[in-house]
Amino acid sequence: HDWRTLLYVLLPLSVCVVTIQESSNFGYYSNVYEGLLFMMAFFAIPSMIASRMVNDRVTKVRGTLGVMGCSPMAYFVGNFIGDWLLFSVTLAGVYVDFLFNGYDHVSVYLALPAFGAQLITFSYVASFLFTTPRQALMYTPAMIVGLWFTPAILITVTEMVLADFFDV
Image 1 (tube, rainbow, N blue to C red):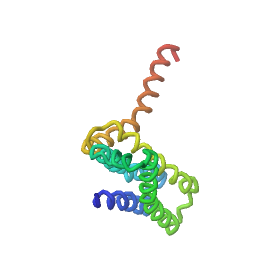
Image 2: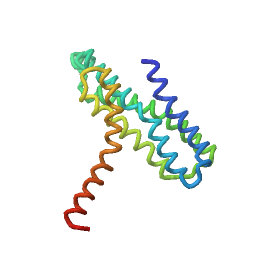
Image 3: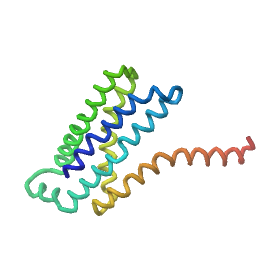
Image 4: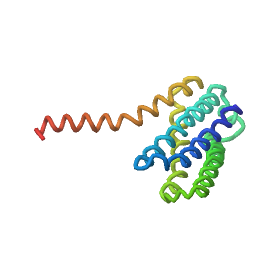
């Protein structure tokens, strides 16, 4: 899985570097531009993590660890630490880029570690929905797109229904 690890670290880092350097060209819309590119930078990461977890389940690695006396919690905590370390490499690169380009949004500095934990946790939960690693690679991005648009659709439909019901 070396290409996935390389992609896991370099894709978000490269997109974030370009985003910070080019965001000043968009003026008023620079925050929207930055947000969209940051989302796209991390778009493929959950599918790569989920496919690895599904592969471990299909090849019965967790069962082997159970026979050796390890608890399932040790498996998940070990994987989480490994994934967090990979995410930390990307995070450190993004922070260095922020510092060199004078990016001073403190909330982003604080939110990125929480985002990493959320991203990894989502990947683990999503991995239980698939039976093959290929399914996880293909359908996890579709789930993410659904999570992006479902709230907006639900809010719009709810407002339309309530407006008709209450004649607002």
